[in-house]
Image 1 (cartoon, rainbow, N blue to C red):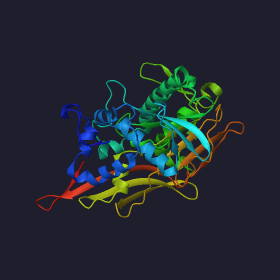
Image 2: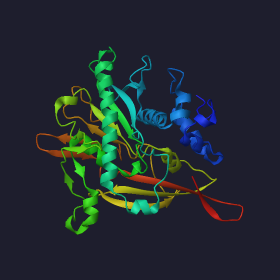
Image 3: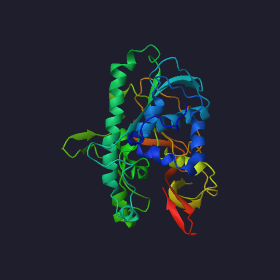
Image 4: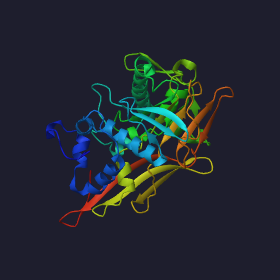
Length: 354
């Protein structure tokens, strides 16, 4: 697929697609093409959709690259769900989806948060919006499974996984796991409460059960949707808020720019977050850093714990009977990453480029 050869008018091109066409981004484009190598355009529309919508297609190609790295064997005979594959002796299916902005609310590509906005950000407001949009995306795929996929012979008796990426608002990359864990397990980490009174919480931000959150219109969004058998058809959720073009910036050498990477990593022994500011050649990040897998304890067809086990890939297994969470790699994982690229202009002044 010639992903970066425009096939639609400039006016119809997504803002993110236009951005990555910059001449100096050729090394990142080449890496993305490498990610996509072997990915079939099963309906002949993928290139157009990539150029028009960008994020959903980017997420699908990222997932494909991840599955390839794990050594997946793909079965492309059927057009849906998105991925039918075998890994570590288990056949399973993955449907990809993105959480997008609500109507009349700002898109993630409309603007970047300023330093002042970042200092004054309300994590509760950001997380609330993310929970609402994630719920909408996940439940929409549950309905499609019930109404369509569950009747397909190649789907029956296999684990079914939803892979969701959040692109629902400016600042979406700040959320780490707060909204998705609240939605799935009713386990909400309240960073705002901690930041107001850090001395009260020497072990870090407090966690609480909220039960539900309210939308602007007063409708209630239930939390803990994996804590009973109502969604037993869903085996697990794959999630990442770091699977963005910044991932390419972080792992690809580009001699045309100076890149600084601002990141937050959980650190051993207890997962305490550590802020890092490093140049591209000092920063170490893999394709799978930032990836998270949330297992459904009531799954009809469970996804094997072994499938996505890897350094830095967080897996969460709630023990409902004993009311505890078992987590892998949560003390050595990527929480957040922001990339800043700089060039020297004709006057030898350093300036930031988007």
